[in-house]
Image 1 (cartoon, rainbow, N blue to C red):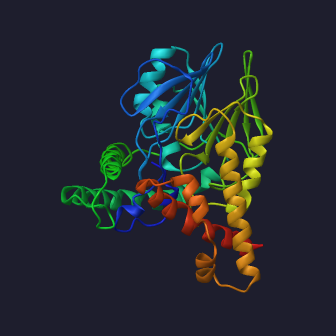
Image 2: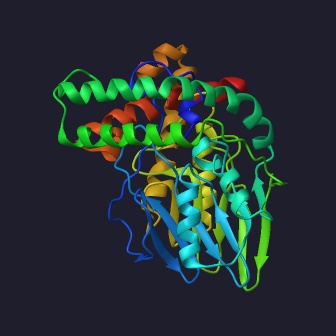
Image 3: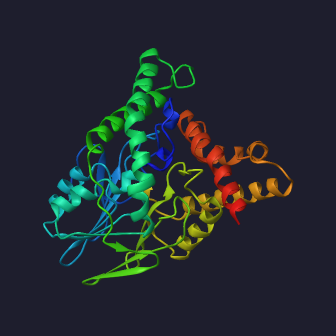
Length: 367
């Protein structure tokens, strides 16, 4: 579960439940890999490179994707979701090689809470993350997690009550898509409450403020700092020989996750340009199906550039933040990302419209 939108106190209503969206949609032509536990599937993207892709429907609650990079003598893993116990079991059906390194692409719970399970399974494992993660997790991260633990069950209970009444969170008749999404959110909250409370943080052994290269036999693995966007701590993992990119939450499908207080919208498009410069053939996003081309990455880049442009224009015209929120028009973008889906439209309004302008305004005002 992504905690970035849980970085604020959890207020009533599932709108504060938390996160993102993910889809099991068929955007990937990768080969199916070994069978996996319910909740994710394993896709083999290249020899030794396996993506564990979540299969939950789009919704407010998610767990993260994960990447296994099986090398000559060891394994490198990208991200440690809440379902890490199941992921470890899945990896062991692929190889008995030890995991030597695990990269946390940023500091939210659905990318780091599994560190403890991975360390227990592979005691020699070393964790790599941006240096800011060491400060965030014991401080702001711990407070945000406590708020999530306190508020998520109530939010899930409210969703269940709406399901029982046949209504959505707006009090309107619930659609089949919303019913499926709410049921998934409720199950993910239950899993979060089973896994997260009491799980200790495992902080990184190595900090990557810039680029870091792991040469594992014949395979080159590049841990890159493309720039910030989703959080201050964003890292990506790039396999140059295979042209496979694990983007963390710099790329999330089908709707990006923006935290008004934690994200950096004015930097985000440039960070995505840095990823485009790599010319990836496949992108494993933080959430969502494997992307087979760069079209969605470009769409995200252009969205964030437009939010920055419109927000800066509102500031130049002397508007305050409240007025800027009304002046910035993202309707065309909402239609491109969400179409006529009630779930995705709600997600776009929650995770892009409000927090996107807030983030762009805050960063601009700090300069």
